[in-house]
Image 1 (cartoon, rainbow, N blue to C red):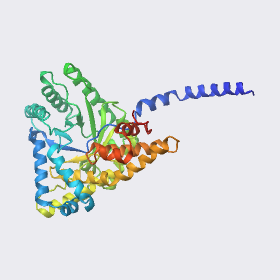
Image 2 (cartoon, rainbow, N blue to C red; image 1 turned 45 degrees about the horizontal axis):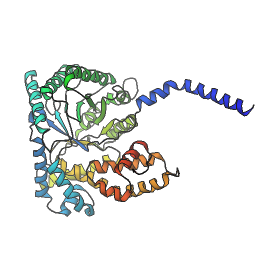
Image 3 (tube, rainbow, N blue to C red; image 1 turned 60 degrees about the vertical axis):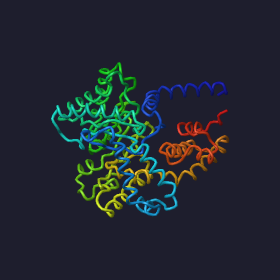
Length: 429
């Protein structure tokens, strides 16, 4: 066979492979849009709707700062209570206090579900409208969270009408007088048991957009809570959560693990229900595999051991929460729930310490990658992982951009590109 005929034969084989894999190629391209490359909040704070007011966020920050001043006046006490290296306390403690004073809550969720309870329709309608007005007021303040939203009731038969009614009342008030939907707005859908509910939620969002089309420039996004076993494995034996992830493209942006509902549904006794129970780890690992490469974000759950009571109880709760936050971060869950103002102390301390411990080595490795990548000696996956870690460190406030630039000899633009593509571009001219 001549060289020309070999080339022709190879082209025919390649065309046949293209035809055989056309559907698979299309599915891969549409279903796996790539990893999330935008800022993700480090936590979500849940506030019952009937207790939410414009000054709630500042109150959370003030309460958290007050307990730091009362119980953690020095660096040694701060390090011990938050389980961080004493050598990091001098850098981390001021960061935590600054965060509590400027933007104590990164992601606010106004709760109309478990934290709110079942109330009469007229009462919930009134609370939905009042919460929307309070949120509008809050968003005009410098301390406003970067991400906001509400948790409605589930789409199970008994509550789906109430869920739609609350969303309608809330959004109509929030967007009255031609106000646009706030950036970073998200709806949380609880107790999901099927991909059909996720698809139905996408339809509900579409109908709400149509109702407020003149005032709604961006699409409504939502996240789902994984707190029922059926969301992990369905009656057909398949991983339901993987179907859920692909049931509402571009609208579904996050999966949140629900510690206590999920544990209770498995029959785990109360004292053993925890974010670190083996059953929780299994569910979260399946969630992690399901979202890989899709851009859907992950959030861990919460602990109901709150920092309240006397000094010993508060310190013990901070130590537990800090350890759990650190554990989640090490396992690739960069977000979690907070239920009490004082949990902000351990949340931010553990988060800042995690990134400050690792950013020096990661920056050094990324700088080496930049030097070696021109010769093709670095894996794109390694570059992406390092750039993602360092980007998260900047986004959460653990380090400053100038600190990172000095260590990596890279611009912020180069790091963002590397995070997305695994390739470090040439320095901007």
